[in-house]
Image (cartoon, rainbow, N blue to C red; front, top):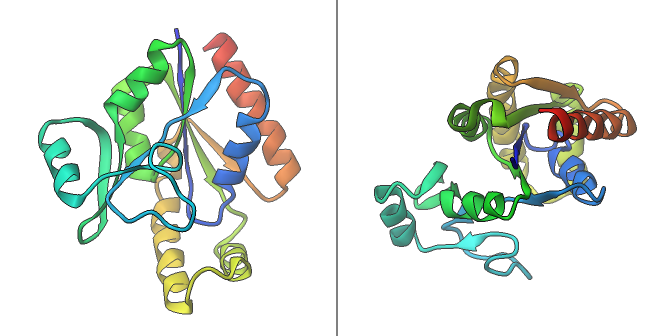
Length: 188
């Protein structure tokens, strides 16, 4: 039976990099593409990076109970995981990996129970997060401060996850994640 692997972490903790690494390891896993009501950025394509929906379409799907989890991050800016996306991947016998916020990750874990492994990627410190976010050069200082405040809040959820991976040393974190996921897929 196909399984679910949930990754949550504060912005800048290295979660997306770890997921990309996992997807390159030849495991039977596929990334769950999230839905959003924001506009595509740059070269983003519908059905590749996200499923792009209008805010009205997103609300209609919420009313129809079509999401495993969702959040309105800003007014009319929704992000969520469509049940149909997950069901499609699972029906192919493929394991699903998620990159979701903490509350969404815990909701998915609650729904799927032991069939899901929830992993929280813990950054070395809030100061290290600040350095990583500043080095990215994609956010204004006020946005970085907001992300850091949110990061501290998100880190309070870590004990509710099945496993906490400390991403102080990227190579060690990669090895740990690969071992955890491989063992979970192979043995449950």
